Image 1 (tube, rainbow, N blue to C red):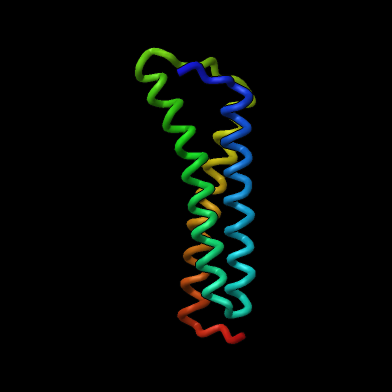
Image 2 (spheres, rainbow, N blue to C red):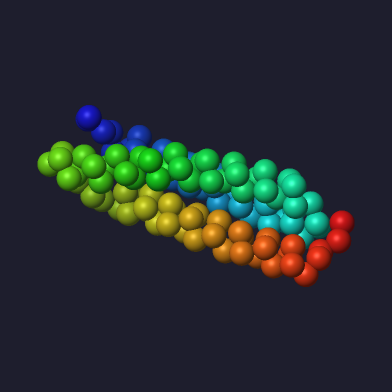
Length: 106
């Protein structure tokens, strides 16, 4: 498959950024005790991460098949966004679990 570098990078950046924003929105909901809404937002965050991660996986598979693309600052930036959004979501999930354990009230 012929991949356009800018399109790939923007797909990763856009979905990773949305995933991160949704995770922090979930954390804000959990702080108020609205755990159902928090879980809903985390689900959306995971879905956005999967889109970004799917694009990354496609890049890796293409490279393994000998069809890699030239890496540049734009792709490094995209990968940075993806990894930070995954880390943020994982930490937010842990924080929400802690809020549940300590019994945050609405």
